[in-house]
Image 1 (spheres, rainbow, N blue to C red):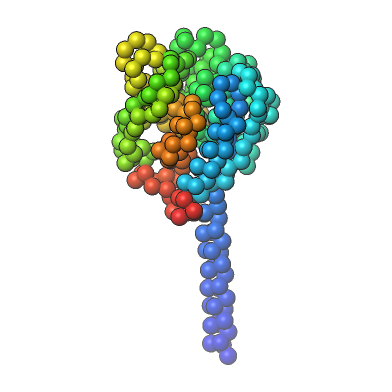
Image 2: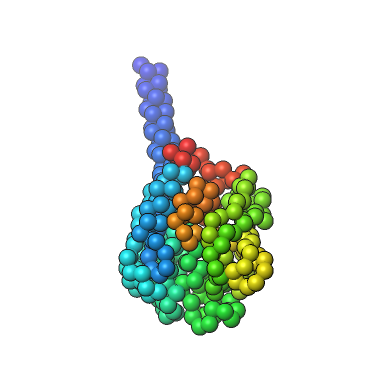
Length: 282
């Protein structure tokens, strides 16, 4: 009888341990929660937000929610303004807004608060030209109000030239985001200038374009990785992505997905998604 009791106790302990491990495994592969912010001037955000959602959910174990405004001004009425808790419950925010004329320091600090608190970030195209204080053509001093958004991005840009094809070249081939990734030449796109690059930002891809910001051959950083704030929040950014044809290009969506996985610590040093976070939860 004693032996039977011991066997039952052992079986019960094994069952509890197995259940606990199963629960842990289930927790480990919960989808990454993504918030896309979209709207503002100069881009087809109505279409691009859906292209991004579909593309990201096909490439990684993520669930994407969208906050969108059809306001096409440079001061769009996104409901995040005045609500520094807008990213509560999300693992990463994709900034795909164009809000060049929102320049109040308190508003910008509110947008940045989740990232200072550790919420990962991905920034696309016109997000680089948002939330600027003063003349964006003049280099901002890190740590000042003028540099609030640039401190977060790791790079300051102020404008672009005409839309022409951009040749993309990987400059950091061992970085997980671009490891094994081949560049390509886009269709007509905007090559953003580089006013200043923060010393701790890691350039990943350069873009070259004939004409554009100035006569002749232009060459700027167009994708980079950065760590922001006291928690070293991971931030991935690319200035590419003006036209729908680029945003819907599988190569572009692959890049954004990998940048997102890196930002949330779900991309291995070999450039492959962590177990459970690839397409279909693989």
